[in-house]
Length: 401
Ligand code: CTP
Image (cartoon, rainbow, N blue to C red; front, side, top):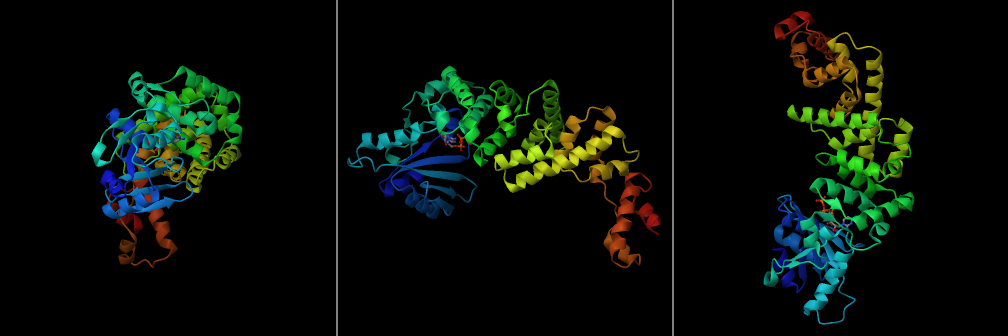
């Protein structure tokens, strides 16, 4: 359909970027990046109309996103044709504007295109020997200024390297080291960078990528005090074990892996330093609250656990009830005492699920007047249940009376 909609307007449409890469690697990828030679905005609107999707246009960048009803996302960019005065039908002209678009991209493996117009549908365009790099499992930039133009690409290189089991090419690695030495990052912070970091920490196993970041001297850039010392490595490994364990519990409450790893990575930072981090990287407000909220709650619980373990289940419950799954798994990962670990895992597997069977309605039937007393009774009931003083509805009724 994309090709047809383009053809009707005498545009040419190409699938590009990660979509083509993953297609050749036979990996799933549900987002299509499309480059239009023609007016990408006009095309995006027409495509949305045809497929009953929604379109969001960024005029400034000449890009648009079309969201289709089945969840598929099409990113549309415009390749500039205006530099070329030749008749638009000439294939060499069309290719050269596409070439320019591809040349501006991050890595050779992301710089291939596939024709989508019906007459040439499926033809692969490979200007930069990308197929070879894909075959050799190499990540290479397209030109020497790539990291200067966009330092977030350094983190993308590491993410791709680890995710796909590729290696960064020698020359490309040298360019990364140069960029780090030049302190390119000093003038480059912000949200896009945080997005890439989140990407790395959301990968199946981010530990090798973190190690690679340390080897390339990138951690101090996150925060000057970040160093991958053995205790921190241990925390990250324990985080991974905790996440794997949590996954086996098949809980409905989802757990954001990146948050657990980021908490573990920044364990030695004070709250104020973490706040600085959030500011520098323009961490979105929601993520900022999650990060700082879980850190504070977990740190408080850790202090208590280090001193003395609660001597009852209800004590454990109240100590940990303020934490989300990420804070809990982080706490599990940084706790070294066996008894503390046991208490936390007991909370996660059992205590957090405990509820009294009686509810407000039952209390009303029992003759209580609705009000704050309800909360008090239900709280006492919960504690009694946690500590095994009551085990079922009948015993709860006796307890309340
Ligand atoms: N791109 C780039 N420089 C960046 C980010 C992106 O050149 N800093 C280009 C790449 O060609 C990339 C495309 O934009 O293929 C789309 O970016 P994105 O969706 O972030 O990445 P994908 O390659 O699709 O990878 P992923 O599977 O992780 O989404």
